Length: 59
Image (cartoon, rainbow, N blue to C red; front, side, top):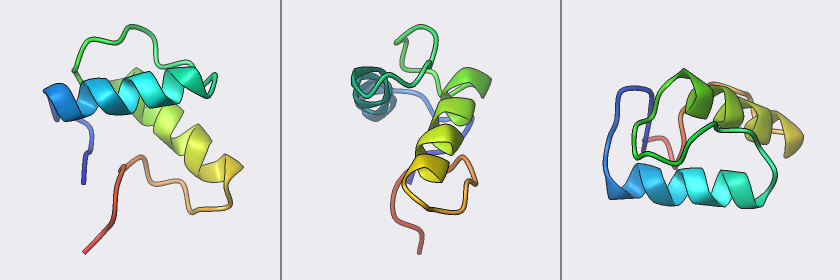
């Protein structure tokens, strides 16, 4: 599970995948900031999920 404030290679992978799907995340930098959160929420909404800005399976 990744959320705002997370950093590292998993965030880079998430950002790359969002960018490949044409969601604007800004810069691929490994920092889960507000731009990445907004993109995650837009993706979630586009696939019928509740947009909470948290990526990955919830416990």
